[in-house]
Image (cartoon, rainbow, N blue to C red):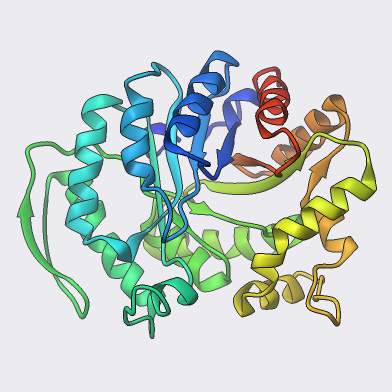
Length: 322
């Protein structure tokens, strides 16, 4: 999604998929970006929990070791830094990888923003809207003058690179906000039916209300290259446990038709609807099928395995060969 443009229908499948991963270490993350580019993968997004490695710093290192791949975040927890600080970081990265950035931001979760940072989290979506009202004009026009409930700024910058800034979205109001103000919406752990029935209509509604074209929908897809259904379910259940424990994810799962089990775990039906798995050919077919539903970009997130590096390489080969 470089330069914030919605992908066109003529783009190949390969150009519309990328790898999304949580850095296990700075060196590992840079290496994965390099390996992805060598495999002809076009995008690499880094996941950043609010108390983990700073992905914008890692992107700077990856930028100088790559030449073509788009480097992105999914997402930077926005409230961990002032919006002008985010703009300054984006400008520095544009100097290293001009036109190759896709810097997603989001509200993150109450359990870190409140329990760890002790920030006001009463109206996170309203604050994120103000954040966008600072970041977007700064990056697209080179100046911003804004006074709101959360931020007041008057600033000018030497450049206006137009860096695309999509936002994380889970429920309909966030997708509408993305349609109205952001450069895209990034889903996370949303089943396909929910994206079709809730996310895409809300994204379009937001765009219509602002009188602009719908921005891209970037869809998170958990993937494991395995045709062992028991293994797929075991690993997916383990890695979805964190999200199942969050009330807002539990409500989204229920709205999508997949309520949690009585013990609070995710259902086998949810895993089957959410996770792409199988042989390499089967994984490739399922990814193409999801793109054919009208999703603009897929953020392919490898599930953890006993050998993560080998699994990543298998997946990179699949993505680069689509």
